[in-house]
Image (cartoon, rainbow, N blue to C red):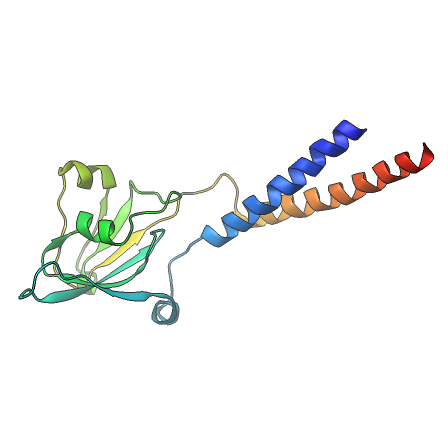
Length: 166
């Protein structure tokens, strides 16, 4: 009985931090109102004399925000100055939408790093780095955490009752 209790107790303590991390990292496309409130603004000037153009970098990156970068800056540089995709990002399907919805393309970060693909930013682009799809969704994480918590409490009661008998 003690071994079973210890296993469920360990599961309970292990599940709650995972649940907290997962709900914090669950990202979705922002609405216009959220973009205005949640994005930070960054200025990157490697050398003076070049015109800075605005580019939105959103999704699962270390520092999402509105970046002002020199015209024709490549996407790899933008990702680099933003801290790069987070560990939970789906970096092989970065979406680059050109200004005004003219066109969009999907980019693999490995191609950018190897130099096989160069994306030059001309201003007004929106870059979306999607989060990696988890094994289960947020509702399932909530359910697992709740069940583990209840089981921990119930088994604690059984263990206390067992100790009081002895």
